[in-house]
Length: 131
Image (cartoon, rainbow, N blue to C red; front, side, top):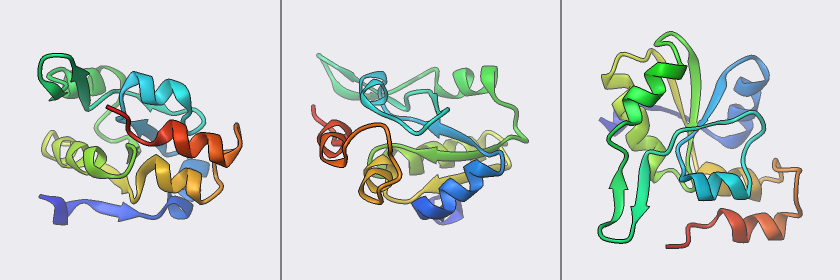
């Protein structure tokens, strides 16, 4: 349930990452490749398909479990927080114990000036979801 998910702002998320949490980016590969949090893992929560539009990745939990342990400390982010919140719920239900949702997603990270690899204006365009 959404109310069971711990959420933090981008500055708190950055602090967690600096002490060893892993950043799990659940955006599409296309979104991730444009720009992402340094050292992020990318496992898409949804895919964009020609036929059906946005579809949940049926292998999401399998892919996560092949890379991460249930006791790993994770900060989960997407573009604006919709997918990451759902991903956190799935992870908690799967038995992951230390899952934190990043409020506002990568858009908020960029808006807060935390993405240093490109000018902010470029990033704002790149990180907004484009169907």
